[in-house]
Amino acid sequence: MRDSTRRALERAAELTRQGRLTEAMATAEPVILAADSYESAEIGRWLTAHADDFIKES
View 1 (tube, rainbow, N blue to C red):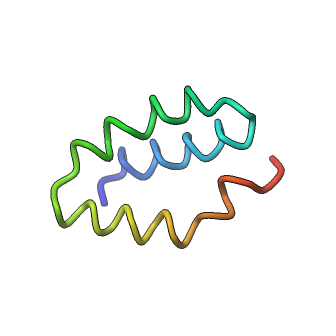
View 2: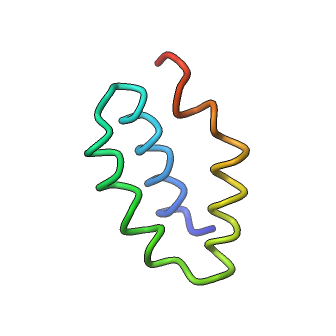
């Protein structure tokens, strides 16, 4: 996965924890939509592995 994609997902997780879901979606959606099939699979694995990042206290 590209570093920029990972950073966007990490930022989306941070925003979600802060209760800023609209901003989180605006951050993550473009990189998810732009991903090719290989990167999409990586994103799916990353999201599964980091699900707690979206809910833990910051």
